[in-house]
Length: 317
Image 1: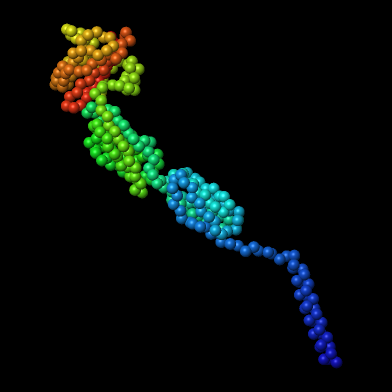
Image 2 (image 1 turned 60 degrees about the horizontal axis):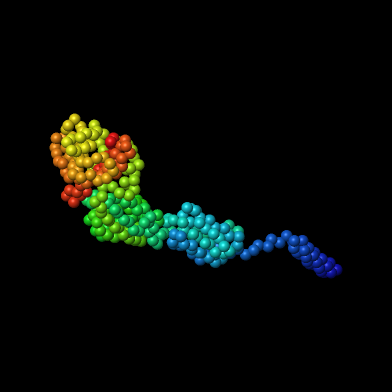
């Protein structure tokens, strides 16, 4: 009898356990959390060198979609994301990083170095037109390059060169043609061709036009203006213009003829500096270039020791 009851109890226990498992399985079917398999974010490259002005593409090899990408410095580079391709456009030389992410907040960065593969200048051919024996200066600006510029002239006697940051400073010295080589810190180089043309004319072109448009009274010679006592007189056959400082120092231009526009003959120049004669009645080329009835504009020049000395004055008629 005891054995019979024991068997019934075991059967009941097994039935309850089976029912319990069946009930649990049914209740939990609606609460199962389905987790998608996550992929690592993988890029084709994480270190790129980009030429300025050129677009470089980096492919997303693996990830979880909904990608974003941005540049840490948009002054250096911008980014465009098209499908699974990251297009990087370099705007100037420098270093920055491109940050890429997916919808699972996986992040990767691309280290980027951008550089110029050529040096871009405001001009590659420089022409000087300058007075004989006088130096002329021109500046050429670097618009694009990798910095750290050095410059050398193949003939410094024709034109010398120096560098101030992004400015190439060229000094023309005598007539001729010369090449100047510019090199940056990445050994990218370019050449400027410099042509120096000399003239024996005191003033011409825009410089002469500017002189004629300025009606301020003045006397100019060899790079400097004088504010001393003006001279406007006659000595024998000569009209005399210039300036005087208590008889110690003075500059005087002598010419024959009237004061109408045109070249004048037998013109002379005298310059005393504190009783010391610098030029004593030196023959000069002299021309009155404008006479408005109140003022005259005159230019003069002479060559000495292979150098053109020149000046001008504006004085009352």
